Amino acid sequence: MTPTTFWLIRHATVTPAALALLYGQMDVPICELRRVRDAPRYAALAQVLPRPAQWVVTPLSRTSLTAEAIMSAGYGPVTPRVEASLIEQDFGTWQGMRMDKFAERGTQHPFWPVGGDEQPPEGESFAQLRQRVGAGLERLRADHEGQHVVAVSHGGAIRAAIAHALDLTAHQALSLAIENLSVTRLERHGSAWRVVTVNEQISI
Image 1: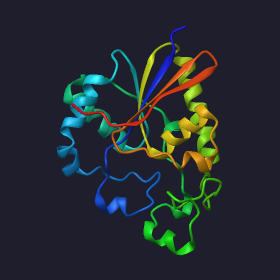
Image 2: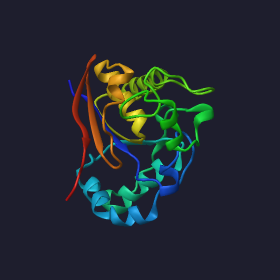
Image 3: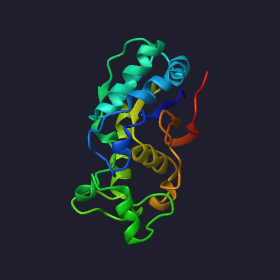
């Protein structure tokens, strides 16, 4: 059976002002200076990503702009589908807070300011994010059985996708490093998931 393969790409680096915030589902801009500097990485992605493929982005502009940059770097034009289930975690009333403010309340996780089982006020926990992303992956798999799906998404959502595939706890999943413009490749073989790469840095 031909597997359904997901190529999960984290969006481009956002502006320094946004990096200082827990931006979550805020529609923050990408950094144009980094976009220029990362031109070779976009070109490398354009070379290795599969054709044909179903492309999806989230409702946030940083994912569609990243997809456009890869296409302009040599992949060619594709019209992505907007997939809301792969959007970043909703941090509720904490969204937009400065990251350094979280240091004042003690360590919830060694690598992330919000604990894996913690639900921000008016937001969602990582467990809820994992359930949402997992349902989205299963739906995409059913719609594109045996095909390639390129999804430009977010660090938290990609960690949630891996957690769904490997049945990781929220605490374990938050220990995964997912860098900007990295590729995480998951395969669905029948009822079984296989993780091929995590946080792969593609270069020429």
